[in-house]
Image (tube, rainbow over all chains, first blue to last red; front, side):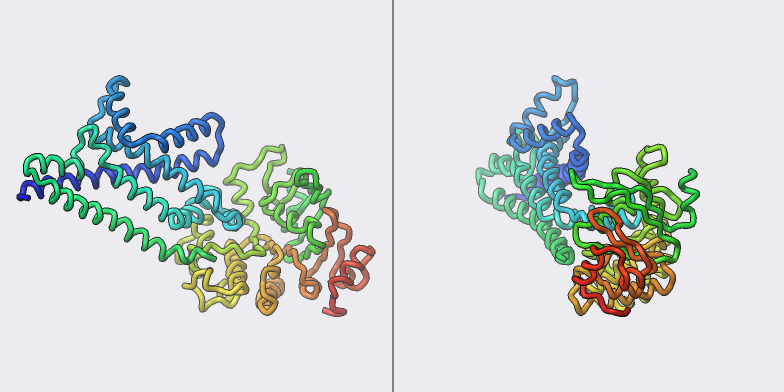
Length: 213
Length: 262
């Protein structure tokens, strides 16, 4: 592999990282918002969210990415590839994250919220100061798991023409006729990216020990 | 408004309070007045409604009928029957401090921050001000050495003492104790009762559900006996423990092996 091949690989890695990072950031927050709305059990909205979660969890990423990219012009939307890719990844991961947050809500100790309300905290302050910090710690293993699934599933967005870390290896071997070296480097880069996430998870686990009463 | 005025001097004023769970009436037309500085103990067998009564006072349970005033302010609903908005309810609740059977400390916060959390995020006190107050309160409950400890490293008695400091930190008009020693190992009961006794000596207003008869006799100004949601006897502790009026209470006291003197 020559210098330009290395350059292409790093560019591909960057594309994978930033598109995944944006999707993860939106997906974690949107998942929490959906879980919160579902707690309120608002008729119709609740059913729509249930429908969204089951459809998004059941649809392969490739299908979702293609559908969004190809249907956007019909809806009068002018989506560029990156936005369509982020949308596909986000719609997918949000559905899984919503379920992770929801189970954290369900398992949260009622006694602790009562103790918070008894001191005069409003439900919002109780959520922000007492529930959320603990829910983040208990949900992090599940969330990080979902993040690494997203990164490993992200090559699916190559189907709409995004040159991500996997797609770029194809392009390099099309010139060099040596497919193995770029694939190996790409594999190492994926491991490095996921490794950062796992390190984050360890950090959370150390704090989680405190919550075991 | 007239109802609020009549109860202005009372720390807690409960009128015609009724509450059912499904078909079971747990509270039936309960009337109770707790004057400022008074210690009221609620006694009764399990299932008599004593915890429910206590939890109605700060609206953790919603009564079906009746009214409750805390330091003259009605809690939960307005006089015209409108439910109170959450912010307003929270403000009245802040006038009560509650200590639970299971401590219910917040495990993600250390001892100091368990105590400063509400003063900072409910009353808007500065961090410094809240920490000064918390330091004083933790000293009062004998937990000065444990500021940086997390709840999972404390014994039950220590947890409960921190929980008492946490409730005191909001400087409430009344302290509510829901069986504060029932979850403790016998050898840890004493340290918690000692703290509560100090508070009563300092003139704190308290309503307490307990099974510790000797303790109830020693600290109470008024003892209330609840049976199937009805207050069937109320008296000063001497009268209550030495010359109960009803057979039911006499029997209860025999079974609880009360000491002859406090």
